Structures are given as structure tokens and as C-alpha cells.
Amino acid sequence: MIKKQEEERRFSKIDNNMVHPDPNFSSSSSGAGSSGADDFAARNSSFSAYDPSRPSGEGSPMMMSPWNQPSPFANSWSSNPDSSKMASSSSENQPQNSLIGSLVREEGHIYSLAAKNDLLYTGSDSKNIRVWKSLKEFSAFKSNSGLVKAIIISGDKIFTGHQDGKIRVWKISPKDPSVHKRSGTMPTFFDIFKASIKPSSYVEVKRNRTAVWIKHTDAISCLSMSQENGLLYSASWDRTFKVWRADNSKCVESVRAHDDAVNSVVASVDGIVYTGSADGTVKVWKREQKGKSVKHTSVQTLLSQESAVTALAVNENGTVVYSGSSDGLVNFWEKEKELSHGGVLKGHKLAVLCLEAAGNLVFSGSADKTICVWRREGAVHTCLSVLTGHTGPVKCLTVEKDKESAADGGGDKKWVVYSGSLDKSVKVWSVSEMAPELQQMGHGNSNWDSIPSAKY
Image (cartoon, rainbow, N blue to C red; front, side, top):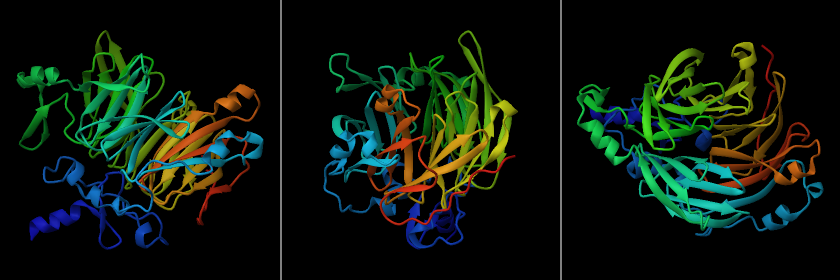
């Protein structure tokens, strides 16, 4: 009886018979008026990332998600029938914020996205990482580790973070850019073996359980790259973030960062790193390097709340930090004001699951199936659009500059936004910084209420 009660506590319930184990959700609902399938419960921050009886990977209740049911779509990737026309039409004939196309496949929930040089990489729970170009499949490569939680591109390497706590490294063939070959795993087998024979390499991960410090002992939730010095950061449900040298796959530091799962890590400029956790906190870390040695020290806690922190984003020059939470709110802080709290963006009724910042825009994806587009002017953020069309939670976002608008050299800066969802689809949007306020794009009805942030 006691064991059964413990198992029931481990997962938050959705409706009466549906469960979702992702630490990106907390147990409190963020909309008093929401009900039924929209009552997306987020996980309790009291959850232990080290619970050995908690299922992981394909055997987890994640596979029992309501979005893992048979899809009405055909069993092949297909673009929106009108997408080719929309993609080729001139910007003058399109609304300023518009849906370009939709990629759908009966393959798996989309958990991760990365885009570079007109190529889009998608990761799901199908073990496949697919590469897309101009809304058509360009290439694919397979990992045997299941759920692909994070993807990041650096030079000719692709790094993927997985449910099994490992990072896979892939290389693009110089002769054929459609060919991707696995070049290694982080940590490497040799590094694990070398560490395992040293007693000093073991750290306690739970009472009466130890592991070598270079290994994550639970799922990887996020990856971030510090391009200036070639350091890769991995965040994990094991409550740590680890620092790796991208050139040789060596782990140089492991930091016990939070009291619960670390859901997000972002490397910013000037050696600053931000982490967000299911324990409700956002922390600031300062990186110090002396030769080959790397050390991160906690210098500030920006947020401490009951709701889980589910996503982080920093703008390009590192002046503004954004944090999304399971209560549907986005908080932000301004570096120029010593990271003082700048305000709250209120645009979602359910948990914020992903954030991206590009130019003067901020994009927030939510369990309420929508994407809010915010434009920043000083400390004030205005909601330009609510992008609708997904039929499941929006789990990941990535943004690229629109090359056509950049080539025009006009005042209107446009972005191509990719959104991945638990409805097994990826949608592609064209978004303008000059779009009129509060226009709703996409299909279907959506009751939305977006409030510009207050000044603090």
C-alpha cells in the first residue's frame, strides 16, 4: 500500500487517467478556468531526480502521454500543401507574421530543435534525428538511445543530449553535407574507465549510491555552447550541470547546482552562466579559467518561487535574461541594472515550456499550445502575436534570421521561427519585428490575454 502511494505521488495527473513525468511540469495548475485535457499539471518540485524506481526512457509514463496516441496524419513527413506557394511568395503578399509551413509525421513527439544555415535538425522520442532543408527532408541519422532531449550545432559538429544521460557527437561529412556520422560519446568510454579506477572520482548521488563525477546519472534536459571558448554545458535532472571541452569531449567540471532537476542552462557573454530548476530558482554563475582549469561560482539567485523554472533565454548581447515557469509566467532581468527584476510577461494560461530571444523579440512556447511573440522596447514588452495551430504543447523553439529581409537592408527585420510540439509536428513561421500589436496568427480559436510587462 505504501509503495503504491509513493508511485502515485511520483507523477502529476492530467484529467483523470493521463500522466506526464517531465520535470518541466509542476503539480499546480496555472489557470483557474482551465479544465479537462488543458489542465496540464506540472511536476512537484519535491520530486527526487535520483529515485531509482522512477522509469526512464521508453518505459516511462511519458510514453503514456495523451499526445502519444495514433495520429490522423499520414505516416510520412509532409509539408503544408500551400507551403511551397507561401515560401515562394514575396513578403509584400504575406501578413507580417505568418505560417510558412508545417511538417508532420507519425514518428514521435518533437522534443528538440536546432537550425543553422537553412538546415533544421529535429529530435524526438523516435531515436531519429532528421535534417530538413526548404521544408523537405534532407538527411537523417539514428541514435540508439531513444529520446533526443537537446540538439546544438557548433562548427561541423552536432551535439545531442539524451534521456540516458549521455551526449552524442556527430560530424558532418566534408564531401557530402547530407551524411552525418557519429564521432563519439561524452563522456568517452576511456574517460569513464580511467575515472572508475580512482576512488577520488566518485561522488555521492544519493544515500548509499555513488557514481563517477564525469557522468550524468539522469536525463539531460538542455545543452548550451559558449562559442568564445569552446565550452559545452549540459544540464540534467540529476541536479547538476557539467562543463565539457567541445574539441576533445573532456568533462572539466561538474557543479551540483540545485535541489531538484536542472531544466535549463544558458551560457552568456563575459563568463556568465544561468541555470533554472524545478526547485523554483534561477541562479547566476561566474566562470573563472586558469590554464586548463575551469571553475564556476554561484554569485546570485534571481528567482526563488514555488513553481518550477522550465526555460531560460538570454538576448544576443547578454543584456536581458528571461525565465519561463510552470505557472505560465515569464520573468525578466536587466544586466545593465545589476540584474534587477524588470517585469513579468503574462501571455499563457499553462506552463511555459520553451523560450527564445532574437533581436528585439522574445518567443515563449507553452503547454497551452500557443506561442507568444513579444517585442522589447527598453523595459517594456508588448505582445505582437499569439501564434496558434499546434494541437499539443509547444515543447521547443529555435529562430533564424530571414535572409531575404536581411539582404533587402530595410528597416523591417524578419525572423524564421521553428516550433516543435508534442503533437508530433514542426511548424515554420515568418515573424516581423514591425508587426502590429496583438494580431493572432494560425488556425483555430484561442482565448488569449496578453498583458505588457510592468515597469519595475
